[in-house]
Length: 319
Image (cartoon, rainbow, N blue to C red; front, side, top):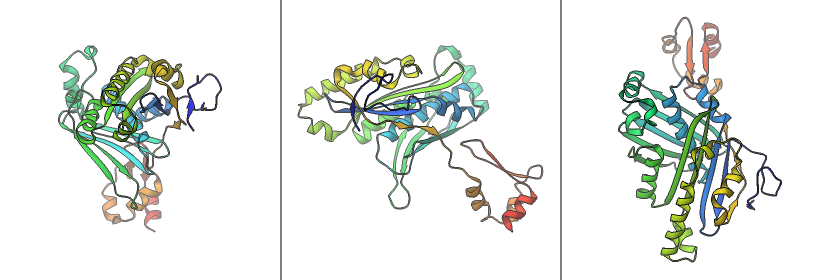
């Protein structure tokens, strides 16, 4: 249910016990612009901490995870929303997906030699590495999969921009013609990964029915972009700055109204039963060739969980 914005520290009908790892939907009532605020703490640390990623790779995957949380929350779907990046650079693949229930996961693949060359090419402290530096040429694709009963929706955009946010903004401008603003921050805070994201968007139908002329609508949009840009990375990452307090600080003059929050948590869909369903369809002789030190070991790329099968386990599987 919508509600007038209140402090998360207080009590009110629109308050939620979810204080972190959340998506907070809101709307700017004076202009009809809708938005989402995403805060990731333990969920992001869990996903990135399950792999020994170099910081540059972890931060880039963190950006993709935040974008998945932001964009998926702007859609009505029942299933899985996926963002996938493929490049020719040091990072060759990244995947982040989030279910309609809020389960988030992701992984990255990279070439250590290429990454070392990128790291050595300039002073690490001179700024964050860009998409051209880490990913090179490639594309970003997003998919909405609602199962066999619905047609899969997919959009693809070239890696054209310094950040993944820039690439997606280019897609919205060129393909969807949606006015969209994205702001992402990912960083280690106290030795743990944290992330925050802020997104604003105006749909064409909302612009047509707002009762304002084009000049006023553009003025509203420019003002909202200025207010969004006034948000600092420290504010997005501050665990002690509640979501409602940040939104009120940024948009109180716009009549910001919040809606029910959505929890986001780490959740991987791998399972032993799913793996065994795949293995059982393969000839045992073929599976035996995968043995290392007497075991077949399958590792989930998302959660890094090992599933091990020795001869006794294979006997059970093929009995």
